[in-house]
Image (cartoon, rainbow, N blue to C red):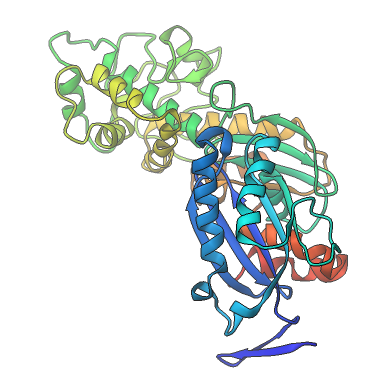
Length: 425
């Protein structure tokens, strides 16, 4: 029996008030979305991260429960009478170890949904099928109804994955913050912290000036001070902000020309122009806007004393993944023309594009997902410039709900309704 719902002059056909629930949970946040089978949004919930490996099972379960419960509560519904609806399918996209994720889902959904059936097989009498899959699959589905293609994710972490029939068939990176996640928010934030410490501790031409003077002197527009020849703002090695020995190679290339940083009059691959950016290493670029922003965030009471040591202590006093919160500062500083921020953005984009190229099959969809790549800003712009034809993902929780509805709708109807789930409103 079909019911008709009419609100504000808009009519929708409700399939017996059968509902599907989608969940997308990573290290930073958990989101749940409840839809009717025709793609009408019914309820939403949001809470903290639910990666059981990174946060612990108890914290992950509490956060996931809060997000799902909020989506299921009648008070969050956008349709009258949804409290009487029946959840007929659930898909949960989780980040982390598959075995831990399965345990987490069983713990949460067996408590919230009587009759939850975690094998996910439809058609079990009296059971609600709950399918648990990696968040890379739901992220891919948020960008395309196609069952196969590539997804590049940059959020707290970073990974590229080849998807075949809505299942992962190969990955690049995704090794966590200790070993990889290149181009992620954590990676970008760590590069910003390293560059700031390097700017504060590298000797200046005038030995009488302190790191505190450096912070107080520079102008907000990122005007660069000039250090000794060969010094580089981000340090060096293969990471922005690392040791000074290889500084020119990481930002300027082997020959000294900035391939990943400021080019010519200050323009980099991301199309962001840096103030005072010449074509050679040697500027106090790290003493500009980005340094001021990082210091204000991490040392709100002022640098004082030994600012480099105080900044390092402030970083180590926080959980490692808290460095990801510095990533938006890099984007803001890059848009403001700070050369160090510009170089970090370009290097992050290059590494992300390289990860995608390792698994992408030409001719198939390529989806950009995760907070770094779905938010407007220089990192997304730079990556899109390197990966032609890439599309930005919509709502991954809605995509999870769409995956839950797909077996009930059939391929044609589900493809036609995809946008209603992934880009509601």
